[in-house]
Length: 225
Image 1 (cartoon, rainbow, N blue to C red):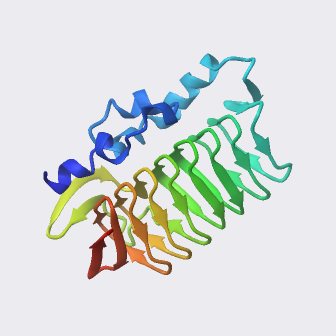
Image 2: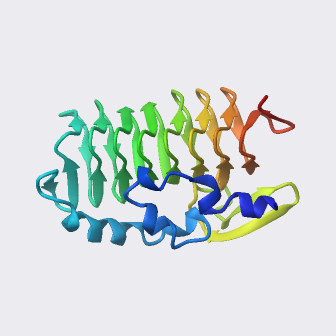
């Protein structure tokens, strides 16, 4: 199977029961294609959520009654915070964000235009913009997505000498289910981490990391044993 098939939505994410966005994401061959309409989709989703389970806390903001939101956190709409999610001290959700059930958005974390599947964790000093994080994906302390190229040209998703043109000037990272990103790593624009793969701490990652792999450096990506 081609790497271009491996970065498709249904290859990166295999947990339909673990995101309110599953049916929405499945409209698109590639997950980054869902980002353009995410704001409007969340605005349409919110009013359909049961009032017995969700509070409409602010303009276009819906928070599950079982979620925990620190008083110091700021949530700007449109946003949906799922059941038993934790939004910790100093978190800043800038809008167009779906935070899944049991997900963790931690101290000084900033989210913008992104989907976090259930159980995804960005617990310490992370920036996640224009990105999708799969079921139980985890970013270590200080790990960030970089979503704009320095020359401001459209982002490509690359593997070797090949690329997929996305047409987007802003695109962060796609993390498959159970992906693990080490502390203080930078995921450069258009990075895709396959399901169950690990990234070493202090890495600068660019392009596609296959599923079930360990990213040690740009020249050393090895299969898990």
